[in-house]
Length: 168
Length: 197
Image (tube, rainbow over all chains, first blue to last red; front, side, top):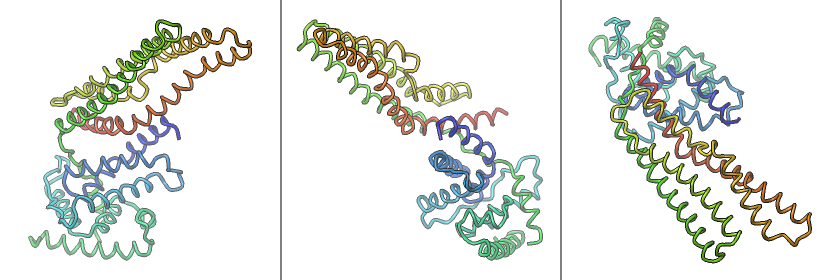
């Protein structure tokens, strides 16, 4: 892969997946400053790994895999044992009404309470990925992804109910 | 969860995460650090060139060899000076209040570091090839014709081969030193452009 080809592929991947990867970072970390840091790190790793990309997996799956591994390492490196800060914020624009903002904030708070891997899995699910794709990205079997997701959904439901009743 | 699909929709429609504002100080510091590194490298190159020129004059006097050698050293010195100057401009950029145009120019300047001598390619290589051929011409006058031609061929090809090797090394250096800075600037540019929309 020559340089211009690498640059073209990078820009293509970046353009098509930027928002999704940013949301994944945000769902995983919750702080805008850190999101930027992690996003940069993911993009650097994507750039460095591009020559090894053979097109065997779908580009988005490949990208998510790098994003996920980078996110896990990032957190291990920088936040060893430290709990996530409260992720609720006021980022909702005029297009999102108050109720939606509250639901989103409750969802983020609930996600923040999950384990590192579960946070990534649920973020991928929220992005609309199938169990099969999540399994490809995380390296666990599709069946186990199914089991995990049903547990995660239950946990989210419980936590979001608690949040809406002022429990969290 | 029955309403998970609605959460999915809500999640995917959420506004883009707001990126932190440009850390001008860190960016300026990173560029200054890059500049200091280049200063050391260029100082070493200039010292080597000056030492070569001094040695030639001291040991070879005003011979054809020393004149040709001086011409090559002077050409190399000119390229180092051009390179050094553009690197110093980059290292002094201040991002206290960056505009999109300013950042774009900074990225262009950094990207030029990938192959900074492209526009001097022919003048530089012709000076090197002519100097080498002059050296061989002054030394090989009594040798058989095929031997002289062989050396002249080497003298003409060598600068091109050396440039190709130098270019590869330069690209390696670019990826290690400039690419991370250019990536940071690209994200700054993107943030500025999004902000202005």
